[in-house]
Image 1 (cartoon, helix red, strand yellow):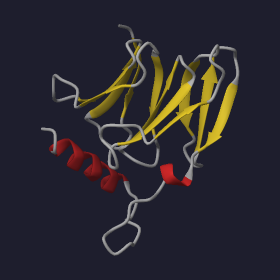
Image 2 (cartoon, rainbow, N blue to C red):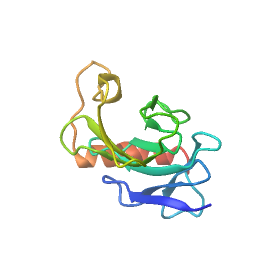
Image 3 (cartoon, rainbow, N blue to C red):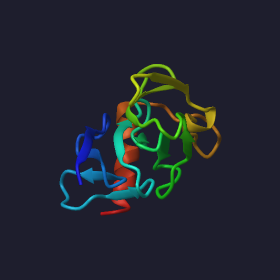
Image 4 (cartoon, one colour):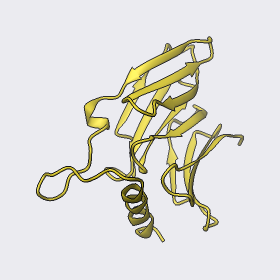
Length: 155
C-alpha cells in the first residue's frame, strides 16, 4: 500500500524509517534489501507519519488514522511500543507527528486542522546509564554506536 512517510535516522546515515497505509512501520538499512524491523501497529489503521527522536538513535514515534501515537525505543524493546496513547476522538485521524528538537514534547496534527502538543513521560526519555548507574554521555557518535550495535544483532 501507499508509503506515507520516509525519514532518515539523524544519527546513522544508513538507517531510515518508513510507514504506510497497511498499518506497518519498517526500519531499513540502506545496504540491505529487506527491512531490519517491521512493526504492525493497528490492523485496519493506516500509519500516516513517523518521526525519529532528536535525542536518541533508537527512539521513534508514529501516528495512525485511529488517533493513536505509538512511541518505541529499540534499545529497550525491539518488539513492542513502550507507549500507545489515543489523543483524539475516534472520528478524528492523526496525520503528522514531530519531536521538539530541544524539549521533551511531541506535536501531532489531525484531520480537523488541530495541533496537539504532548509532553513525553519521564519514562520515555530516560538517559542511558552504565553498570554503576552513571549517565552515559550523549553524543552523535555514541548514538550512532548504539544503533550500530542494535543492527549488528540482526545482520
